Each structure stands twice: as structure tokens, then as C-alpha cells.
Length: 455
Image (cartoon, rainbow, N blue to C red):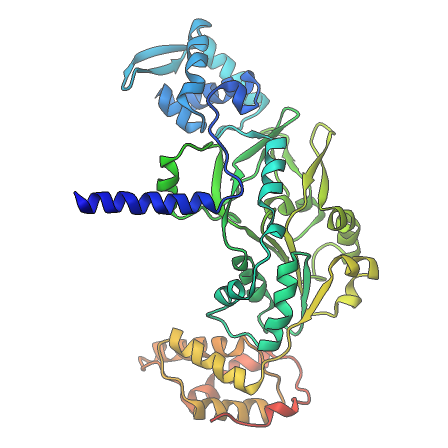
């Protein structure tokens, strides 16, 4: 009994901690009025769901559209009195199983032709706006210990670390620029982890008769399962999902269309744009300057939102809506920022940080890290051989991606030849012939710091 009480106490303490860390928590809607949605919308979700599954209990239908059974109980009776649904039998907990009547099937078809969305009930746009204001990333202001925790398992130069800290703390956006292969994208993706805490976002948003899908498995990671179980013990609005602060990464595929609400005329369902999905998190524009759109087009699209922190989007009906523009925007590029955009844009991205080539010491440290991951012994003499023969003599630049890539090729070579995984001079001599020729840029003068070995 004492163990059970201890477990319950621990769970209660953990739940209290989770809830104490939250600046926003959606409370459960106990009536249709509390949802902020028109009755006709909720009715359409119920009937379209029944048209899909055939027969369902009232509680299961409430669960499917993420509303409380208490809020829907009267609506079920109303639909039955209008002969849209019919009882098919009794269900536990003073409930019934329901099915559509012929009239109900006709009405469900009309609803589906009008909008084919079937899923969790949406939340009104204004509730979403308030949630972003309450959970904004700019309220976090991570300190040194948060940065150290986020970057603990990767190699980062101390000088660079000191530059990144204030930039991340400001939440104002930054450029990461430098040669390819030095970890700009990796750094950008780790930055979100500095902010910690999980946030709530709605599955979908409702405005002016339009449903805009918000939750996206491609960019949003749900909270840990054990946290969800604890949260279920406390009442919350299930139209919202608890996720980790998002990191939305876009590269060369970025187009102007992806920055606007995309409407499907066949389903009459809309999709939130990328910057909206990244609210309260980070938006990484990777390989900036090589998108399908010109940098100047992006400048013209975002210059006002970067200043005012609000964005204006257009619904399919033509109505303009105002939504928060609350994320840390990171531009990662191989080019000098001033070559891409003008001074007006650079002023709105106040931090520009160069990611330089690693030093020989850091190169060795990277090999130590990756040798552990590849489960092989790190040997400084072999890495010195690699530096001397294939970098200094060949006049090649060091890149942070090389230790990982070279070890990956050595692993493939050893696996193919049924050899134990290890780093040896002759292995490096073999794999560089297929790697350096295709990946490295033209040989140039190596930095003076490269002309030394590490023991």
C-alpha cells in the first residue's frame, strides 16, 4: 500500500510540476457555447464521422471530435428528435449507440460536399492568437545552462558559443553563415532545445466559416506519452495537443505559396503556412539564397512581420486575418548575408554569426565524439596522418562534417570486407579517393593553424 501511495504522490508531484511550467493551458469546454463554435459546425462533424464509421456510441463520437460528452449530450438528443440519427442500442455509462437515418445520410453528404474535414473540432482563431501570445518564445530568455544542455553532445567552439548565447536569448533572429559542412543546420536545429518547455497548439482553427489545419506530424512532435497520461488526469480541452516547441526547417523547396494559407477547393479545407506552424518555436530557412524564390521576394513578404511580429493572411473567401508572427527565425547560408539581401532586411535580423572551419584540435575532438558513436577506438596518430597527408599536403580545408562522413565510409568498407570497425591510415587512404574528390571545393591555401598535429 505504501508503494502505491508513493507512486500516486510522485505522479501528483510530476503533474503539478508540468502544470506549473505552463503559461497557457486550454480548459475543457463543458457546453457548446464554451467551444466558441456554431452548433451547425459541430453537428456536421458528428454526422460526417457517423457516415464514415457507421455506428458509434455517443461517448466515442465525443472522443473522436475531441469534445466532452457533457457538451454534446443535448445535441445528440436534438439530432435524434429531428430524425437525423437513431438509437441502435444501449451503451455503458448511461449512453447509446447511434447511426444515421436516411435523412441523416443525405445531410451528411451535403455537409461533406461543403467541407470534407473530419477530425478534432477546431478552435476559434482568437483563442489561438491568445495562446501564442501566452507561449511566445521571446518570454523564455534561455541562459548559459540551457545552451550548454542543448549543445552538450556536439562540438562547438567557445568563441562561437559566446556569440550564439546573446543571439538566442534575444529571440530576435539570426544569420548563420559560412562554408558548407560546418554544422550550420545542426546548430540551428539545436537552438530550439535551448528554450525548453512544451506548448499547446490546436489541431485546427476556425475563422469565417473556414477550417485551417494546424497540427502537422512533419513538424510537430507530441509530448511524451507518460506526460499525456498524467495530463489526462486533469481536465483540458482535447481540441489542443501538447507538443515540443517546433523547429520548422525549409530549404530549396521553399516557395511563396508555402508562406500563405493553402486552400484545397475540392475538400474546402485549408492548411496553415509554414511560419504559422513554427509559432512559439524556430523557423530555419536552410541554404538561404538557393530557394526557388529570390531573396528579395522573401524580404518583401516578411519585412513587415519581422518588425511588427504579426502577419496578415488571406482566407479563400478573400477575408484578411491577422495572426502572430512569433518565432525565432534563423537563416543558414553559405553566402555572405550582405550579398543576398539589403540593409533594411539585415537590420531586422540583428545577429550575423559566422560558422568558421574547425581547428585541428576541434577536428580531433570531433573524431573522438564520432568514434564513440561508431564504436571504434580513437587514435590521435591516425587522425594526424589524415591531417598531414590529405589536408595539409593536399591544401584542403577542414569541415565539421568530415569526421562523421569518413567514419561512415570506413564502416561500410569494414562491413563489406567482414573486418572489425577501426580507424587505420590505409583505411583513410582508401576512402578519401571517393570522398574528397566529389565533396570538397577546389584546393586553396590552408590556414596556418592547420600545419600542426595533435598528440
